[in-house]
Structures are given as structure tokens and as C-alpha cells.
Amino acid sequence: MFLMVQKTTDITLLCKVIDNYGDIGTVYRLARALEELNQSHECAPVSLRLITDNLESFHSIEPAVKTDVPYQILNSIKIYDWNAFEFCHNEFIKNPPEIILECFQCGRPDWLEKLLFDEGCPEIVHIIMIDYLTAEEYADTFHCLMSLTRSARVEKINFMPGFTSKTGGLVLDKAFMKSLKIDSTNGTNNSTTLNDFNTVFFTYEKDWTPAVKALAGFKKGNLNVLVAKGRGHDSFIEAWEKCGKPFKVCNLDFLQQSQWDAMLCETPLLFIRGEDSLSRACLTGNPFIWHAYPQSDEYQTVKVKALLERMRPFFEEQLFTCVENVFIAFNTPDGNIEESLKEFLKNYDNLCSGFKKFALNLQKNGNFAKNLMTFIEKTYKINML
Image (tube, rainbow, N blue to C red; front, top):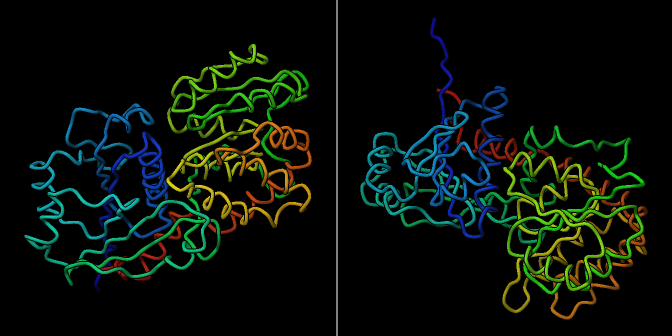
């Protein structure tokens, strides 16, 4: 009698840190979600390797990460320093990658490029391009679309995160989902009392005087604004001081990813930036306003409008106008932030239901990590010997 042995599949994640912590935050979240599936036997056995070029940023969101070593293991995930050419080349030539998750069009380290195309891996290598999160329609079109490479031994395909069932969805890692208190019967997460109302402010730099003025008139108890470190911190504090410090401000210490997630889930109003934090804000079911990364020719407004169209069906049209106006105002140079934010805040209680419905609908698209593993198992048929 022959015993069928289940094969362990190597998955290598690549990440270059471009915007401080968002890139590594998203990739680390995905790696943890894949390992959760692995540990709970919800997918074929995998061995995870994560390669990043910025261990310092990684350490900021996960203090257990060491910054001065070429190789380490954290929670069963093997972590390599992208810049350790000789060490990584020697390690990977002994155990070439089977599946590479190339995240956010980051390219590949020179030593890995040499291994894949010059020296040649003994088997076909599958590269899966994990792109930036977007609500634009092209995410549906590009999902699972093949791309060309310069070698028949290296195959490439796109796998898109997104907001519809035609994409891979969003990462629903267990730690984050456990922090949620939202379901189909109760309300949004809400730590609000008549005496205390918290909001997180995490944006890019801008003249936030109009936002401070609008928040100053928000009649929801004692307003506490938790200002996160980052590019928008100083400009918000400057505006707050200019307006006479009309409400309480708390400067947040830098939080590791699990703490940040828990805070977003517990805070009833979010001003948010970045891809990873945007995805978490969408899933909390709490009202939020997104400040997108400013781009040339104001292309960020295209991304903002695309997200708004995904959100629109879950709101009454008249109420949704409040959401639409403030999102556009926050993301255009001449937007009327003060008046649009005042209107948004005036309708806060009535808007909660729409944000909750949007969040629950996103959960129906499934866990990006699980959808990715299902795709890998079906497409490459590598789960069994």
C-alpha cells in the first residue's frame, strides 16, 4: 500500500517599501493570513518566505523583527533582507522558489533575477502579481489575467485585491476579524458615550484648518482627536493650534499593526489614508473619510470616485451626497472641506447604517488569502504529490 504524502509548497512574497509602512503592512498582513490558513489546515501545506528591502519599516509595525540580520523566522514565516545579495543567492539557489508573489509591481532583487533568468531554475516558476488595491473597473478585468515574461520557464499572472466578487477581495485575517464587533444584526463598532467621542486622524499633509473648524462644531460629546504620526500630523496640529485648540488632541505613539487594527475597529469616526488602513476602515463598518495619495494631474480623484461608486448602493441617495461631497473635497486642492465635513458630521448617525452595509458586503467577497490559495491549488495543481 502506498501512502499519499502531501507536498509542502514554497511561496515567496516580495515587498519594496515605497510609502513608509503601508506596503510592508499589507504584505505582512497577507503573509500572516496565509500562515493562518496553513496552521489551521485550510489550504495545502505551504512554506512562506518574505523578502523585503526595509527591515526598519517592518520593525516599526512588528517590533519582533530584527533589523540587522539577513535571515530570521517570525511566526513560522522566513524573512530575508532583500539587500543581502550573497546570502540570499546562496540560500535560494539551494531551494529555488516555486511561487512568487510580486507585490505592488516591486520587481525582483538582482540576485533573484539572476537565479530565475540567467542560471535557470530546474522547474517552472509561477509569478503572481499582487497589485495595489483599487476600486477602479480595471481590477475586475486584470484579475487572473496572464502576463508575458522573457522566459518560458517563468510564468506570470495577475491577482487583484478589490471590492467586488470579480476580484480576490480583501484580506480577512483572523486577528483583525476578531477585533470587529459588527455583524448583520448589531450596529457599527462604537466606543462613543455622551461624554466622549474619539476619532482617528491619519492623512497626508494639507491645510487642515477647515477640517478643524468643522470638527470644532461637532456636537457629539467631548471630542478627542487621535492624531497619528506621519506626513499629515504636523499640518493638523498647526491648524488645531491656529484655531485655538478647540477640542482635545492626543498624539498617538507609533502602534504595531495589531494595536492599530484594534484601535480602528473601536473608533467610531476615521480619517484615513494609505492602502492597508483604507481596507481596514472599509471593513470596520465605521464612518470614514479617505484621503488618497496625491498624484500628478489629480489622478487620485479617479480612485476616490471609483471607491464612491462601490459604496453608493448601500446608502440612501440623499445621504450619500454627504459622503461623496466630503470625499471629493478632501482630495481636491479647492474642495470645500469645512462645509462638506459639517454636513457629513451633521448626518453622522444616519450614515452609520450605510457604512455598516458596505462593510458586510465586502466580507461576502471572501478572504483574499483564502481566495489566493484556492486559485493556486486549482491552477497549478501542486497540492499533492
